[in-house]
Amino acid sequence: MIGEKFTLMQYSVSAILGLIDVEQFVIPEIQRPFVWKRSQVRDLIDSLYSGYPTGYIITWKNPDVKTKDGVIAGGKHVLIDGQQRVTALMAAISGLEVLDDDFNKDRIKIAFNPLAIDSTKRFEVQDASHLKDKKWIPDISVIFKPDFKQRAFENQYAVLNEDVDLDEVSEELTKLKAIANCQIGVIELDHTLDIDEVTDYK
Image 1 (cartoon, one colour):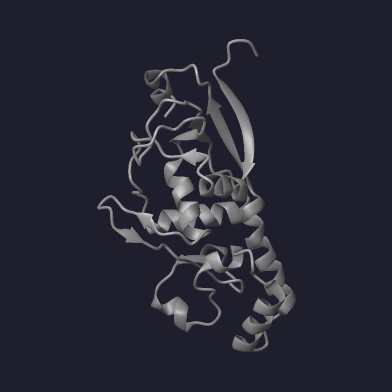
Image 2 (cartoon, one colour; image 1 turned 120 degrees about the horizontal axis):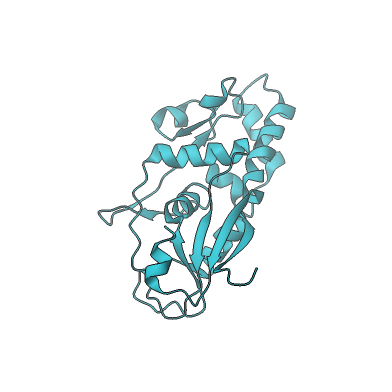
């Protein structure tokens, strides 16, 4: 449509994390540090797993804006809205440390119970109990590593959990891994917009 100031696109979770990894999605100087509670990270993962919408991410392809590390963005996509969600995905799925508002590095680990009967108890923020209870996978980021071997993982899980239904475990792990293919809407603002117009979109 003539005069539109944005383009609407869809990216998979893995594509977004890949763009972050190669620094094509960058965080602007005006953004906040990571302030989400750990429970919000858990809830985001649960929403993706359950197929619920998680809102749009807004980017701005502006060559002149300064990013958080003080570098000019160039032709990269500057993250205007959605930093907390993207950072949560980096923490839970990529297993990266995040900087909190006190600039301390921290890991946020999300545990997963593929045998959970109550769907509200499927994901939890990892604590000591998830390391002891062998029904729990204490850190879901291992599932998303490129060298993850699902069959070997399932067999080891069965050793630790006797009488487990391996078909059920396999189905749940496959569904968990499918989070990487979940689509997230990305609104890219036109490069001709100025900073005041851009901040109105937040």
